[in-house]
Image (tube, rainbow, N blue to C red; front, side, top):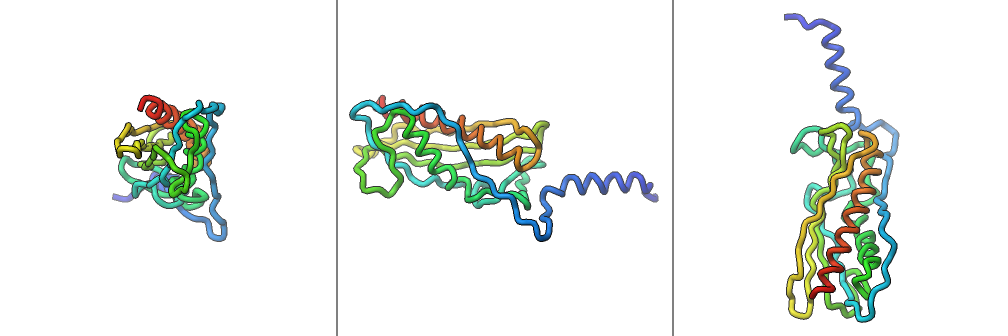
Amino acid sequence: MRTRPRACCGRLWLLLALTSCALPQPGVPPATYVLEATLPEPVVPAAGAPALEVDAIQAWPQAEGAAMSYLREAGKLERYAESRWLDAPARLLDPLLRRALEGSGGFGAVVPEPSVVRTSLRLSAELETLQQELLTTPSRIRVALRVTLVDLRDRRVLGSRRFEVVQPAPSDDAYGGVQAADHAVSQLLAEVAAYCARLAAER
């Protein structure tokens, strides 16, 4: 059976629309983005608040590298060709996480690992996912981070919890994903900092 030209053209345009965000343009450098976070006003820590050492955030395989990830089909991870993060998202999150913890009021000092500062607490974190989901309209950003707080005096786990935030994107493109990621990360880090400060106070 012969395919009518109009139907064939319609399918071709649909295919081009779905793949255009993944095709690099010759000679055009990719747009580079950073993660930013808007955090609550810092709280002055109480006298005697413990010092906290923060390990570098580890990334699950799907969150490694500087490529910006998105889903058009469930379970199928793709990468934007013309947009990327300035660095791997886990490394971009590192200073933001420390700043959120510093402002929580729960710690006298927050230092990266390794450090010469004597600390009584250590926080480790794993970035499970940071991806844009084009499965709905509007699209949305999903970010998930698992944190574990350990009391170094007796090697006791004070708490371990997975945090996840899903944020609608203002547009269904990479820049819309970046804007949504900033909002999602801001909310997630505020929740993580409050959780860790509470665990430190209750120990």
